[in-house]
Length: 222
Image (cartoon, rainbow, N blue to C red; front, side, top):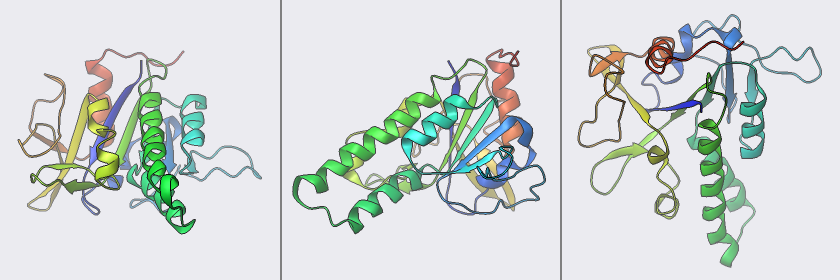
């Protein structure tokens, strides 16, 4: 069973920048929307089927393709950045197709199923795999900060964070970019007991990965 972790935060608060210390040789990055990395990205390159298949960055928002990539990669670390656009891109495509009637409502079921399929697959890979799912945040009607989706009709069908054991949230405090590890009472942050020693840690996904690797006593791939 693989370990899936969600990293939540507003744009510009350090989600993607947290990848900066990951070893690209051991990391697969899946981007629903192609965008440059916000750090010096030596070693990171886009897959090009017309060239040698050595790239470790794939651009796709298709659930089936994402699941195929996660299951097929030999890399131990998988990053999906960011999850909300998988939902939003499909929603906007179907809005542009001007679906009406039952089809208009059916899309929420189908988008929810795609989200569920990806999150379930992220937790059902080989034991040594770690999957980091980055996503934006929104506030619900009770003022609680949660993963951003595409509205109440989808939220009624699936609670993204409920499918995961580890949820971190970005914070920017006195110019420092951090992850929070403990629930504030108004968010969905959660971590296993003893995984982290502090309520706030550096926004370094490599350090988070090392902590998870040690905590769960994982082994390197043979």
